Length: 316
Length: 316
Image (cartoon, rainbow over all chains, first blue to last red; front, side):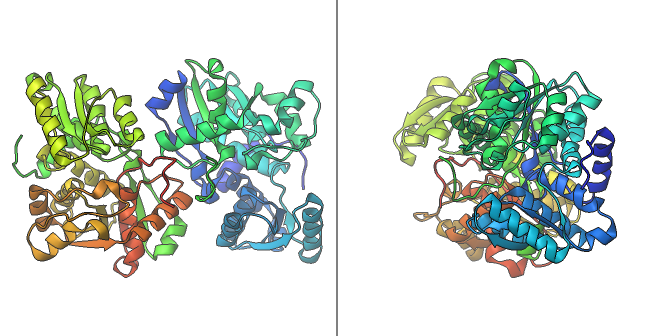
């Protein structure tokens, strides 16, 4: 796996590479939400992406970047969330195996999502050490190629394709708001935006209960994620090192949001946009609710990063 | 109010008239739902319509059909559901008053929706007699023009504009499935489809617990709605007389569905389409779940008629 920094050319190449395998997702708007925020807000609906999240972009870019000999041995990752399903979806598109290490305790819907795309699930104990051991064992046995959910440059480039679509769909945007967890989506979007339209502000939104990116950005040094506690279960990972370097260079600011505002954002998106948003996906709009003065009167794009929310597990 | 039968020309005129005031709603699809149904299913997303339901089409057509002298006295209706909010939205677009008679017991979200569009709410006791008395009193006092939710030919013509969009968006369709309550949407869609593409089958879907259309259609004579009992609270009204005549002439068949299948349809649309569908809006897809053999291998359009579902009131 390369650790070279991805740039605009990589993102543009990713867009061509993944075009047959992912959706160009729509923008949606609501006059009532605009009035509520005092801004013009365009929502980029990655909850309508293949496998229900932006993760399909990076996973497809990684899978379709492999040379044939590598691809034939399959791909692997450990994931309790959207990356696992996305990698399975991408692997099916290339007709290769996807091995997904998941904690036995992962929600049934997450396992079903991986299985629905034909992914091979390997269960393990719910610790990072157990996951890594299971993945290492699997790779030794199969020779499968590991695709990391957010530090892989091909994944970052894939996620950056969201921004190319945004710039075409909302030509007059002033500011884009992106959730941050491991930092793959944020880094990719920031590189593309600052390369093509440097006047557009790039704002990251992070749960206050998992604020390593906020602290790292403020101190100028990568800080660990300490015992994260937030409803946004897709944003628990600590920032990757490569991601942090890219974010330092290309992101303008990081705002934190409370879980209360995340839930309020989900409910408003439900009521006004009729769209199902998972907690992590609502963090961008929560930033508009929590920091309205920063966005007043501006043309905002808020990225809805995913919509994989269990119908039986509403957080209210 | 005219009781002339609306025809294709009225629907085409309605489309031009309402174009500035309503959305052309998108089609969405899911490969997994196609596999689930053994058919190619395009969902027409009227839950993304203004005010969250197809009702905005008919209401805007009625409001913008009024001559100026009539319009100036405002419009009125009684409604505990989507028609009230739609009429308020339409009236605001013309800058005239909308008086909506609602039972005091109506859900807070329904009242909020009317109020959010500037509608004037008149509360009454929760009986049809009380509603009609309150409406008559209001009309006597204000001279407001009454817009019936489904028997008004301008409303039927407005609802029929859904079908003009469907024919352009899904040119290869074989069959369209439409929920039926009072019959405004069904009649309008059926007229447009049979006028323009008579080979397309028009199927109505109705809750088994409110099956007056099914019974009327089978007997060839309008039957009353007896003590309806279904989760699909937007489909409790009995079929209108004009609507029945149009449905007899233009609809191919009526299928009933259980409440269990309505809930199953809502959950699948949530999980796979990430879209919020109210029970009445899921009745069309429920027909595919309950009668799969009728649709196997065909190109189907299922109309999602609305998405006004209280986040605190999930039916599971």
